[in-house]
Image (cartoon, rainbow, N blue to C red; front, side, top):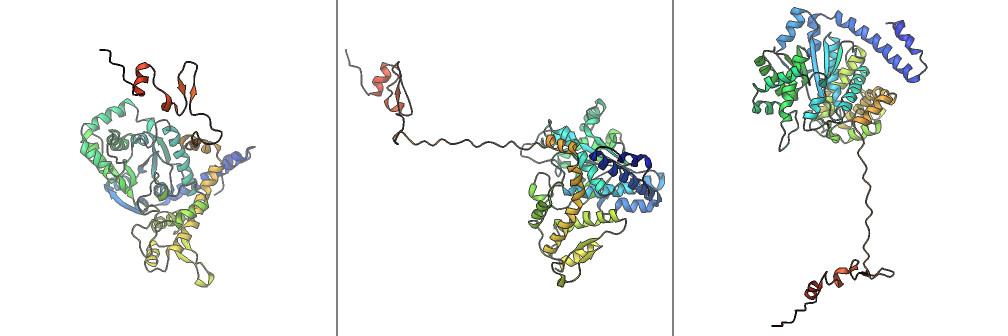
Length: 452
């Protein structure tokens, strides 16, 4: 498809940065038009298949099917993220699904939950919330652009734009009157940071996420499977305050590099989107990747939920993941189109941890390159990064003064007599007899004469 002439005219700008932005805009516009036509060409059943692809769980899918098959309108979906630590490579998982939703003709809202970030045990200090939300907006748009995803049906919403209204607050009070402390705490157990002495903000968090479904006017909320308890709370509690129940879709959670959950607060479990190739290679070399073990293997999961689907999105066909051999004499590269084949090879040790790590490193570096290039060419993104995530203050080491004592050559006297008779110095306690006659006599162990 040729670019619209109105858009191409922007390219002839004096600013090099503006030229790059204009080219990206024109290409995105062309890709958007192509994807929109593709979405319109899909049958309702094909749209449903794309919506459900690679999901771990679905709740109330009949709501989705009523919209797509009976009402025949665009399905409205929202995905939210609390704007706390810097987004990492695990964010490719929901972005791939959002790409599927958009390709299926859905209308997608992304909630940048700035207030939630503050409520979650102060993960985002109130002073930094605004800047971090803006940082997330830069990251999410760049992630989707790197996947050639059209964003004409995408809306990004800041939670603070409506969650501080009187109407929302009143509904929050209404919801808190029908949800018990036990249920709210249980709902947030896998999402809200758990501490020994939790604050009330952790109980408000799940209630607000529930209420967001109504205020964002959606049919579906999408999230990780760790959100399941909050989704269940939403399904049960919204009808109690006369709001309709929504459907819920959940993707799998990709294990972190150390084997547990990939977390923004654990640097050893994740790879940041701005990590250099050297850092990516170093982290992946140390990643947990036991031979022949599929369960809990973060690298195998990353191929399944990110690398294969991303390649499929970019190519417009079936996904492909290539594993180069270490030596030419070892044979042709291993080429995978099906994750089941890759898993079978890994369990048979035909695909070794060393080969897998090397291939994932190369694919991930290629995947991050356009995002990092966009960051380097965007002064505004760099500025908001420094504001949202200011570098920690480097504390200067206090120089310790060595106490050499008073008897080394050239040392000053340990005491110094002053004109009023008192003494000062590090040894004054050894000669000071006190502030008065009684103190002096006491220190000298002299008793007054008995005159009786």
